[in-house]
Length: 290
Image 1 (cartoon, rainbow, N blue to C red):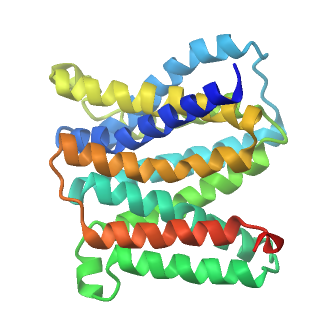
Image 2 (image 1 turned 180 degrees about the vertical axis):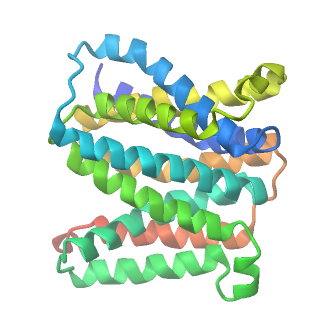
């Protein structure tokens, strides 16, 4: 495959991720979060088996990678619960824009604080712009509106995902990215099973076709397939160029939520999302490129 083919695959991957928010919204109206979390991670783990066969790399696990896997498993479960509650009480399109655009900003801020990295002036400007975008999207000008809405869950999800990103970045020294994703899903499946073993896990087989389409979509296409495409493309095109395609996720998410769920596209989400995307450009650009 040439670079053009990988570009098309990346656009497909972003579309699959974007549509996942609509699928999650459908799931929130059916069963409790603990049951959804278990089955999602269980199906994701199964769907990784043919992918592991395809990449033909021996599956290995060592002590060095174990701490990253355990940490990311806890954070992934927390992210799933938080985003589930946010989407349940809010809009799928709004949640996707807030989480997708604020997560990179939160990641950069978290790395700077944890590792005490000195930032360039242009990066400080980008962070300030990202905060402005967050204020607009989360409607922080009216705190009563913020605390009585799903926005607090969206902000929590963005913060949790920043932690996931940090762990994922450092884990690649010790373990292959696809192996890492598989072990996270497997560990999260086991952990969520022990948490929900008293629940009626078999109730999913009483659900209709819409539920199963949404569950299989978010588990297989929206997670395993999209993530694998992203990892492979990153190796061919480079992480910087590949990451820039992430800006397509909220666009697709808003459009699909509008088409399928008939969600209104809110002006403050579009404006705040655009500001946050601009902030990410400043954060990620090197000073000598301006």
